Length: 211
Ligand code: ADP
Ligand code: TYD
Image (cartoon, rainbow, N blue to C red; front, top):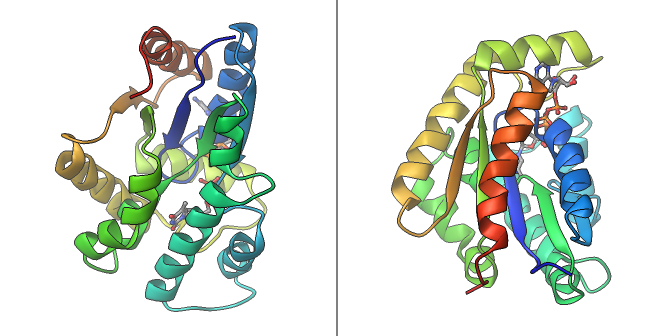
């Protein structure tokens, strides 16, 4: 069995995270990993409230949304039945569709990034990803994909907002490059080319030890 890893996939809405997670799951499994794929917002109690907000069923201030994500992330890590910490202890390699960089990028469009980073400090203290994989897609391309493939468009899914979120991702990576491992992948390409690049970055981790 391979050393288990914790990998976070990041990117703006429609950047291809779910598509790449399915492929990565298969490749890691074939490579001898026991894989647990997960996502934020979670399907737990706080995550369910967040999904209702994104669908437009409930409305909430952006600062409240940011706070709910702090709680949802801690539940994602610490949940006694299916939390990430439990899965890692059981030997799973965990791949998550979004983690704290999503909060740094999405919420700092509306508030100070420093606040968002501090509010998530406990999650960062508990667990930093072995690799944050950023699928770097042009907002125009991802907006086209969203419009083509979805029946409804969610809160935050406008071209203007996705451009702002992408800029905030860049700012967050620059701020935290000394403490985080970040792999930037050019996402304006075919599914196969992107998957190949991601796999090359993951493969280099397989040989190293968890700190
Ligand atoms: P996310 O999980 O980041 O929102 P998805 O994986 O759901 O993104 O992809 C959004 C849409 O774009 C889906 O319909 C998917 O099939 C399509 N898609 C994903 N990657 C690519 C790609 N590299 N080229 C073209 N279309 C893609
Ligand atoms: P998600 O279901 O991953 O959407 P998509 O598949 O379109 O990428 O996430 C739903 C929304 O949640 C998305 O617009 C990003 C937002 N989000 C935040 O605003 N803050 C966060 O901390 C996270 C994890 C997600």
